[in-house]
Image 1 (spheres, rainbow, N blue to C red):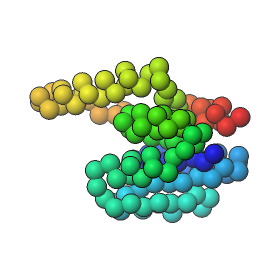
Image 2: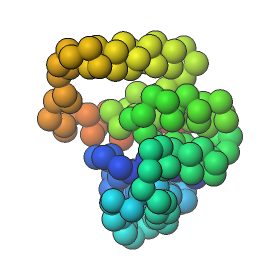
Image 3: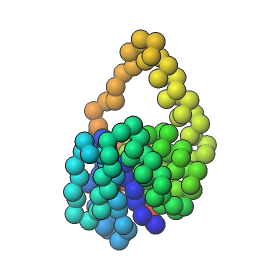
Length: 142
């Protein structure tokens, strides 16, 4: 088992690494060349910049039982197909019961944006979100 982090825009990289160290689990950060990650206690894999290049690399190295941290529903679906455990940065565990609804909401939001509708962006991150992420990751690991 290892933890794979889709690190581009991920606010819980340091927290995930800290938890991985506590449980002596290998942690791998994946990013593209437009980002730089060098964290003690984690391996970093940097891929060429390109649409979904990080996602494809992550899916290719994920195996059943790995923990994947991402906010990307498409990547989450691909990792679930490989029997990985997939967790959002807010602590939600993606699974076969919720992924279809999440993908549909992403599709609807994209169609709305393409037709000119303004969709609200993400709210400022809260301490409660970090606590929920930590609790979910700890629950998976214990």
